[in-house]
Amino acid sequence: MDSRRQTFYLNSLSLNPDFRFATQENKEVVRLIVREHPITQLSWLSGVLILIIIPFFLVPFLVSLPVSSTQITFIILAWYGFTFSFLITKFFIWYFNIGVITNFKAMDVDTHGILTSESSIAFLRNIEEIKKTTLGIWSAAFDYGNIFVQTAGEEQNIEFLNTPKPELVVQIINTLIQERGRNT
Image 1 (tube, rainbow, N blue to C red):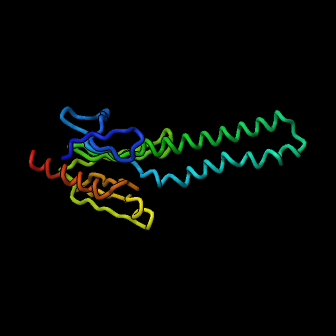
Image 2 (cartoon, rainbow, N blue to C red):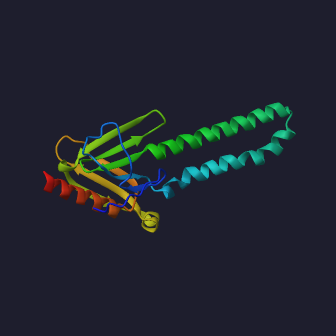
Image 3 (cartoon, rainbow, N blue to C red):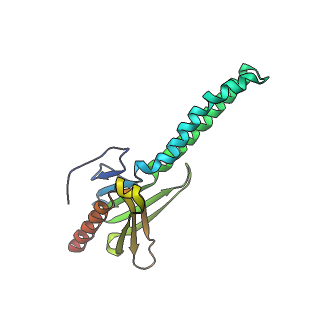
């Protein structure tokens, strides 16, 4: 396994990061952290850009109405407050929606809102199949796709959606499974 450390907190793919989590075991080492490819976030980022620009077009219209400058200021501040809240919420969802692969297990943390998340864990010894899919021209051009990890029995299956370099991620998981099999 490549021992190079690549850590930057906004990366969508971090190899051997300096990362710890609450339930990490003594000899457990985080090998990979994945989150959605940044290109998949362009839809909401462009929405934020539009929300930032809209007041510049609305102010001339609002000035022509019989409203005070205080009311116009309040409307604009409320608008930008909403826009900033939307931006922060979407960023938190992207940032905290991660996949963590260690030398023992694969974890999927799905964040649905600022206060709502769910997580799934699959031990490497129970992984039966790893499937990679890339759909469309965007995923081919920017090298991202979905990874589905299927497990045996009652354990939950894990999915990493819109992951950058899906072939590399599958290769790393397969290597860790083989290493885990030799060390058992």
